[in-house]
Length: 89
Image (cartoon, rainbow, N blue to C red; front, side):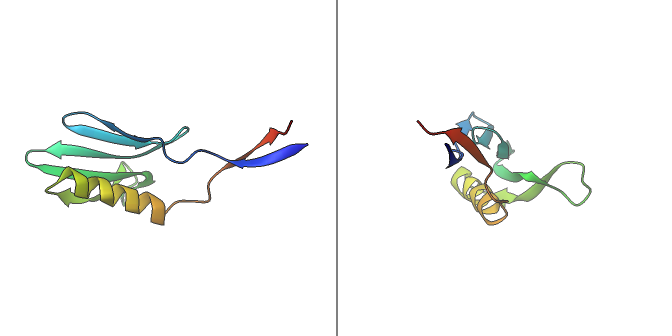
């Protein structure tokens, strides 16, 4: 018998001094880059208007605010989560 199981929630942020990336077990979801004294947030699940890069979410004075912008964007704009079937037993 097959059992429906939702994939894991986002695994979380990977952090470095000037770049942070958010991913789950299967996807790259967003990133935050430090440029000068600002943190630039990007939604990696959507294209920008020119369809030649990730969607820019804004420039923030704090890393926390930039990460919150990414988290909000991917939660609000997320497609239904993929589901996979696993054998029960």
